Image (cartoon, one colour):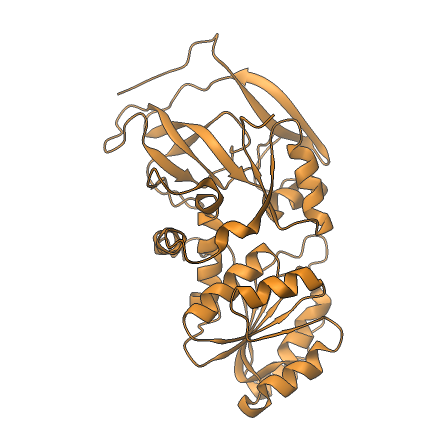
Length: 335
């Protein structure tokens, strides 16, 4: 089936027009190009990346720019040449455009998109919305930290991404220590499987006591963009350990590193971006994330702590910087 929109069909969209300038507008529903799907959006996750683009600008697109990229919905129209999809199918999308009534996605994978992932009809919004960010966390734990059962891992900060890493590392038998300044999040870290949870103050001494018999951590995953934390993470590793830089560092991109420490103790510092920076994508991490989220015994839905709609999506993006709650979910039909 091929479907297009008429000039009279309109949709709402929340787009950035510059730094700290988000506007809710009404624009035509796009014509569905060949090779793409038009999807009626059910929900979109509010991500730290969206907040960073709001605060410091867009470097991978042009204004006006719709930063939402963790969304799901049902197919509303199928572009020419597309097979295997029909109107009404439910899917997850990871391209920009999620803060809208409708979004487009190419059916074939592109550099920064897995392509549409088919979803079961009964997977709750609060779990389905986490597929892309959980896939990112699986990439960090398995591909970049290279953790395995019996290893010792330190995860810096129990935000919404850190907690997913805690859950996955603990699930595969890793000893996990979490460093987190907020008491409520420390409690959540234990619920998600952390063996040891400590406040930020004095964490290095606590790490030595916890992993001393192991001569340090096999991996330290830094989930916050603070360059001053990089060298302490290096110090917390055992010889041959790995520091995984999971967060972007925004307008603070430089850190001071003792390279002798890296050399003589053979410490590796690696990044972790999405499911792998192209051409190194591990697209199977999406399928694994869906499988984990379909297991309702894991408490992932508790990570969604608020909802927003068009009227308050900008406020939710701003609030993302304040540590108020964990993750907000944009729902177009919210009032």
